[in-house]
Length: 390
Ligand code: GLA
Image 1 (cartoon, rainbow, N blue to C red):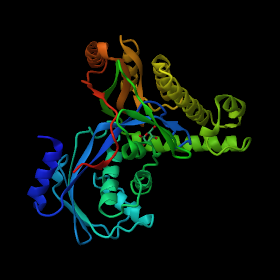
Image 2: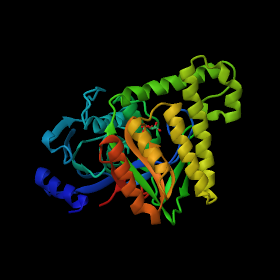
Image 3: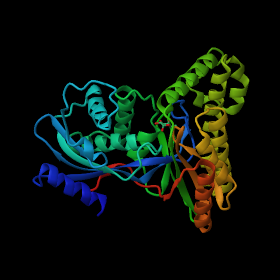
Image 4: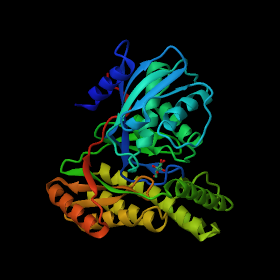
């Protein structure tokens, strides 16, 4: 049964079939290049996936919300009020929904009543494909559709990031929420995170496919190490600001960075800043290469991105390095890198269509041999952003 029908059926079973039941979808994302640049005022180049979170929803007249998540059936129906929410850190799946409701209120958009909701994901959680941003944008698009039609999809992305930063304590940038809210079929989003100006770039992959490989590992330091990287980048920026007027690391060209880098006192912070600056320029160059049909250069920049994330930003891990290295030497692979925050999760590769089968087979075998783990491989198509389906 299609997930749309599954959530609708489950909704009718749990909450009754009367009234105006609506169905929504919000995608996860894969980032093609531009990693750990979004909180450094740089550029990113993600696309929304056709995988994500679905929900069946009906507005209520009181201030209650009731949730049932088919992905976590043992939790049963969660019921709470939309009033009096406070940031906490209980780490439960519905913190993301509560956080978004809270974020709208904090930003002066009072939500008049609650809703009932049944949801289900076809995106693996914890795989670095932004399952959490997909839940946030699902919730934001529901609130927008039911109560706040004047809110824009970009506002929904901002609310999602605000909630994740301040309700869930994860200091993420805006990339994931923006990709989930604003995705466009067959396009990636070239987003300048300093201004939120964006451009949809057609992927035009006639003879190639985007291949996502899930390492099926998630190292536990991911959350705290992410926040550490962010503060190390900020320290580097402060040192640079003592010698040059810039607002973010994304303002610097590589030449300018080389001129001022001696001002950065801590060698670790220097490495973090070097990644942020060079990755931003790589992203700009990669988009230019793609637009001119030079996929070879795009792939090479993806590979360089991985090396920089591994050596300078130090957010890769053994498993992701193995996946990237194996992909680089496998026939038909144009480029490959870790994608997302790191410390596990997925790689993204561009692979020639006529080598897909052999690529998948040799990646599976090599990864199993070197790690003992069965990786999960799928091809991805760029999809539309969050919205109401029915
Ligand atoms: C996570 C964050 C994003 C971004 C990436 C790294 O996915 O949520 O904001 O910083 O890591 O590029």
